[in-house]
Image (cartoon, rainbow, N blue to C red):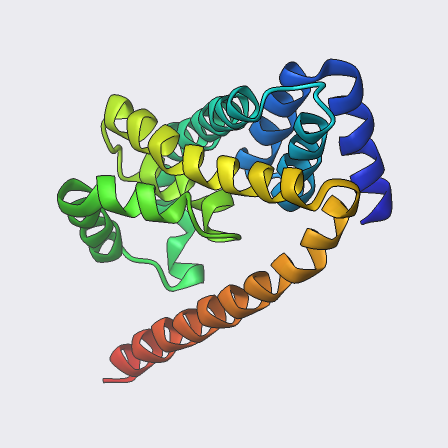
Length: 200
């Protein structure tokens, strides 16, 4: 973690706004760079007067969109054939894909917006949106709208903490743990229901 944080700090220190865009794009492409390091450090640079808090937030949201496009593209072009062919090994059926399609058709905007506000979930929400072929312009719009307040909040906290910006990561990981447990419980419920249906 310290090595990753050092890498993030070095990139943003040298590239400034472009570094924020690059790091948040990587984080949103399902590669787990910690946004709780990226944006608070950028906020700290805003606190020092080297960057603007507003433009740091916009750069972070723009990076989220770029990275999410990559994850969306993987889901749209390769995700469905893989799920249809190998999904049975993960207890995923065509019926599940149809349910996901209907969900994103009816609630896709809200799902993406809220998903981009949640740690852990925000990193991976683009892939199922791509699998369900959510319209790209809607996906892009709500990815940006959900990412902007998230990036602003983290950068603002980093600016408020000043020299102590790096203490945010430890506090933020409590949310990661809670959300991870919730995901495991949902996954366990999903597996249990599928196994029960197969036995029935």
